[in-house]
Length: 144
Image (cartoon, rainbow, N blue to C red; front, side, top):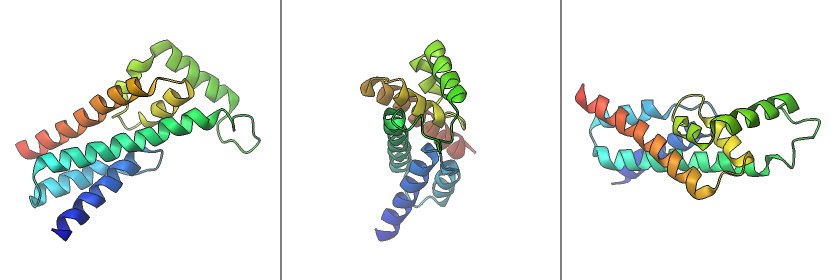
């Protein structure tokens, strides 16, 4: 029982970290746990999805507050980069959140916060994208 909780906790942390701007890879952890076979695929899918979605929520919240720091000297993103990201998001819209599952999709979740995407819509699209990706990983792993 404790080992199961530890495994699920580790998966949650890996998935959460992978959704932030930190360099984590949660799919490796998920596949390893699926291959080990100690836990069913459904709890793994749910925990990985929730962790990854919550990591994206942190990104969205950071985006909401980023404007406060935008003009500080130490800010790592140039004005041109911020403008370019906002123009891109303005052009392609909230539907780009369906790409938040991709390796470079996490910055899109920050831009969604900057652009004041309604939280319910953000959460819906990110949930579809992140859970869909993990469902594909689970299906491919179990099919092999």
